[in-house]
Image 1: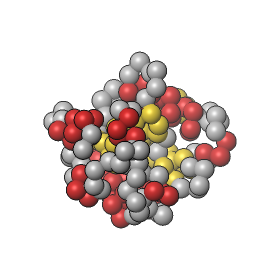
Image 2: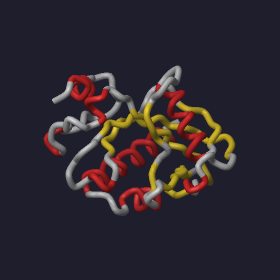
Image 3: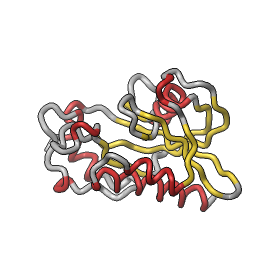
Image 4: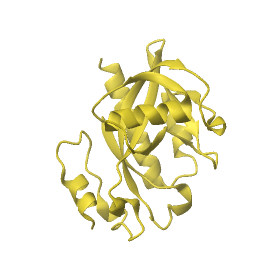
Length: 178
């Protein structure tokens, strides 16, 4: 197991349950976990009629997902999440500084081999304004809690689908407890 993986799995300060590495096995030599990159997602939301709605974007292959990516030269992980929200969904909003959950992600084409599994730290982002995204194919779309769960589960293995459902559930709890 790589040093970064061990570090991420042993940290008590992460506000989510630690992933069980036995489900996915150790990262491969080519895994981004071994490269030391940090990945973040912006879980973009609004509240309509007292119920949260989530803004999801499409990948190039047509799957629905949260705006996410690696932390590059950003000042903080939250700034990286804000950048991803803007680039992929055209979102301007308030991003929380501390991630509310971390989840495992793998590109759909590699899910069966468990290659390139990364840990993504999710930050809530309250959407204040939308502009057209920089990547036109992203098609940002609002979904209710139940529809967001269904869209995120499509074409994913049960393990990865469960990870994304837990993100929606935890986000909903945080939003409604304010």
